[in-house]
Length: 146
Image (cartoon, rainbow, N blue to C red; front, side, top):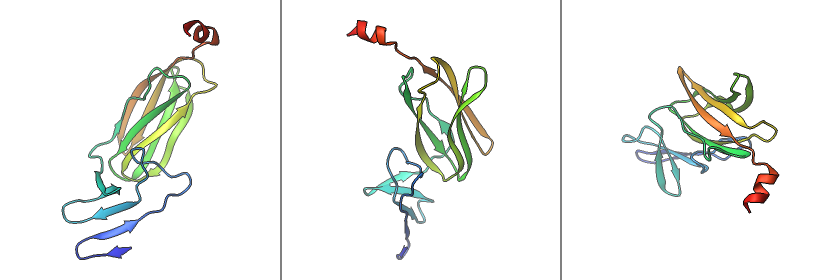
Protein backbone atom coordinates (compact mmCIF):
# COMPACT_ATOMS: atom_id res chain seq x y z
CA UNK A 1 0.00 0.00 0.00
CA UNK A 2 1.31 3.44 -0.98
CA UNK A 3 0.22 6.39 1.16
CA UNK A 4 0.35 9.82 -0.49
CA UNK A 5 -0.79 13.25 0.64
CA UNK A 6 -4.55 12.86 0.05
CA UNK A 7 -4.69 9.50 -1.73
CA UNK A 8 -4.41 5.98 -0.41
CA UNK A 9 -3.63 3.54 -3.21
CA UNK A 10 -4.25 -0.20 -2.82
CA UNK A 11 -3.19 -2.71 -5.44
CA UNK A 12 -4.96 -6.05 -5.77
CA UNK A 13 -3.59 -9.11 -7.49
CA UNK A 14 -6.00 -11.31 -9.45
CA UNK A 15 -6.86 -14.62 -7.82
CA UNK A 16 -8.05 -17.81 -9.44
CA UNK A 17 -11.85 -17.80 -9.54
CA UNK A 18 -11.92 -14.01 -9.23
CA UNK A 19 -14.41 -11.80 -11.02
CA UNK A 20 -13.82 -9.78 -14.15
CA UNK A 21 -14.91 -6.18 -13.92
CA UNK A 22 -16.50 -4.91 -17.14
CA UNK A 23 -14.41 -7.47 -19.00
CA UNK A 24 -11.16 -6.00 -17.63
CA UNK A 25 -9.19 -6.99 -14.54
CA UNK A 26 -9.06 -4.07 -12.12
CA UNK A 27 -5.72 -3.93 -10.32
CA UNK A 28 -6.05 -0.68 -8.35
CA UNK A 29 -8.62 1.23 -6.31
CA UNK A 30 -8.29 4.90 -5.45
CA UNK A 31 -10.04 6.62 -2.54
CA UNK A 32 -10.03 10.39 -2.20
CA UNK A 33 -12.37 13.26 -1.23
CA UNK A 34 -14.06 13.56 -4.63
CA UNK A 35 -14.40 9.84 -5.38
CA UNK A 36 -15.79 7.42 -2.83
CA UNK A 37 -14.22 4.48 -4.64
CA UNK A 38 -13.37 3.74 -8.22
CA UNK A 39 -11.33 1.27 -10.19
CA UNK A 40 -8.43 2.15 -12.41
CA UNK A 41 -7.50 0.37 -15.62
CA UNK A 42 -4.64 1.79 -17.68
CA UNK A 43 -5.04 5.18 -16.01
CA UNK A 44 -8.81 5.46 -16.63
CA UNK A 45 -11.14 5.77 -13.65
CA UNK A 46 -14.13 3.44 -13.65
CA UNK A 47 -16.91 4.68 -11.36
CA UNK A 48 -18.75 2.12 -9.27
CA UNK A 49 -22.35 1.40 -10.28
CA UNK A 50 -24.98 3.57 -8.62
CA UNK A 51 -27.61 0.82 -8.82
CA UNK A 52 -27.98 -2.93 -9.12
CA UNK A 53 -28.81 -4.16 -12.61
CA UNK A 54 -28.94 -7.31 -14.70
CA UNK A 55 -28.36 -6.57 -18.39
CA UNK A 56 -29.87 -8.51 -21.26
CA UNK A 57 -27.63 -11.36 -22.37
CA UNK A 58 -25.74 -11.16 -25.65
CA UNK A 59 -26.29 -12.72 -28.10
CA UNK A 60 -29.95 -13.52 -27.66
CA UNK A 61 -31.02 -15.97 -29.03
CA UNK A 62 -27.78 -17.87 -28.51
CA UNK A 63 -26.20 -21.26 -29.24
CA UNK A 64 -24.65 -22.62 -27.02
CA UNK A 65 -22.94 -19.79 -25.04
CA UNK A 66 -24.01 -16.31 -24.05
CA UNK A 67 -22.61 -13.44 -21.99
CA UNK A 68 -24.48 -11.77 -19.14
CA UNK A 69 -23.40 -8.47 -17.56
CA UNK A 70 -24.52 -7.31 -14.13
CA UNK A 71 -23.80 -4.42 -11.76
CA UNK A 72 -23.40 -4.66 -8.00
CA UNK A 73 -24.04 -1.41 -6.10
CA UNK A 74 -22.45 -2.45 -2.80
CA UNK A 75 -20.54 -5.43 -1.47
CA UNK A 76 -22.88 -8.19 -0.37
CA UNK A 77 -24.39 -11.58 -1.12
CA UNK A 78 -25.22 -11.79 -4.84
CA UNK A 79 -26.63 -14.64 -6.87
CA UNK A 80 -27.08 -14.92 -10.63
CA UNK A 81 -28.90 -18.11 -11.59
CA UNK A 82 -30.59 -19.56 -14.66
CA UNK A 83 -33.95 -21.36 -14.49
CA UNK A 84 -35.91 -23.27 -17.10
CA UNK A 85 -39.45 -22.19 -17.97
CA UNK A 86 -40.82 -24.55 -15.28
CA UNK A 87 -38.78 -22.77 -12.60
CA UNK A 88 -36.12 -25.46 -12.14
CA UNK A 89 -32.62 -24.13 -11.52
CA UNK A 90 -30.29 -25.23 -14.32
CA UNK A 91 -27.17 -23.12 -13.65
CA UNK A 92 -25.56 -20.91 -11.01
CA UNK A 93 -23.43 -18.27 -12.73
CA UNK A 94 -22.43 -16.30 -9.62
CA UNK A 95 -23.00 -16.81 -5.92
CA UNK A 96 -21.28 -15.36 -2.89
CA UNK A 97 -20.13 -12.10 -1.35
CA UNK A 98 -19.21 -9.95 -4.33
CA UNK A 99 -17.64 -6.48 -4.11
CA UNK A 100 -19.33 -3.48 -5.71
CA UNK A 101 -18.53 -3.27 -9.43
CA UNK A 102 -19.54 -4.35 -12.92
CA UNK A 103 -19.19 -8.02 -13.83
CA UNK A 104 -19.52 -10.30 -16.82
CA UNK A 105 -20.30 -14.02 -16.70
CA UNK A 106 -20.67 -16.55 -19.47
CA UNK A 107 -23.24 -19.33 -19.59
CA UNK A 108 -22.45 -22.43 -21.60
CA UNK A 109 -25.81 -24.14 -22.14
CA UNK A 110 -24.37 -27.20 -23.87
CA UNK A 111 -26.59 -30.13 -22.94
CA UNK A 112 -29.67 -27.99 -22.29
CA UNK A 113 -32.63 -28.22 -24.68
CA UNK A 114 -33.63 -25.30 -26.89
CA UNK A 115 -36.15 -23.00 -25.27
CA UNK A 116 -36.80 -20.01 -23.06
CA UNK A 117 -34.82 -19.65 -19.84
CA UNK A 118 -34.95 -17.07 -17.08
CA UNK A 119 -31.79 -15.47 -15.72
CA UNK A 120 -32.34 -14.03 -12.24
CA UNK A 121 -30.10 -11.78 -10.16
CA UNK A 122 -30.71 -11.25 -6.44
CA UNK A 123 -28.73 -8.95 -4.13
CA UNK A 124 -29.58 -7.19 -0.86
CA UNK A 125 -33.32 -6.81 -1.53
CA UNK A 126 -32.86 -6.33 -5.29
CA UNK A 127 -34.07 -8.86 -7.82
CA UNK A 128 -34.33 -8.74 -11.60
CA UNK A 129 -35.11 -11.41 -14.19
CA UNK A 130 -34.29 -11.50 -17.90
CA UNK A 131 -35.60 -13.88 -20.55
CA UNK A 132 -32.88 -15.67 -22.52
CA UNK A 133 -33.48 -17.89 -25.53
CA UNK A 134 -31.36 -20.93 -26.33
CA UNK A 135 -31.79 -21.91 -29.96
CA UNK A 136 -29.86 -24.95 -31.13
CA UNK A 137 -29.16 -24.99 -34.84
CA UNK A 138 -29.38 -28.47 -36.26
CA UNK A 139 -26.53 -29.70 -38.45
CA UNK A 140 -28.96 -30.15 -41.36
CA UNK A 141 -30.15 -26.51 -41.13
CA UNK A 142 -26.56 -25.27 -40.85
CA UNK A 143 -25.50 -27.24 -43.97
CA UNK A 144 -28.46 -25.99 -46.01
CA UNK A 145 -27.76 -22.33 -45.16
CA UNK A 146 -24.15 -22.54 -46.44
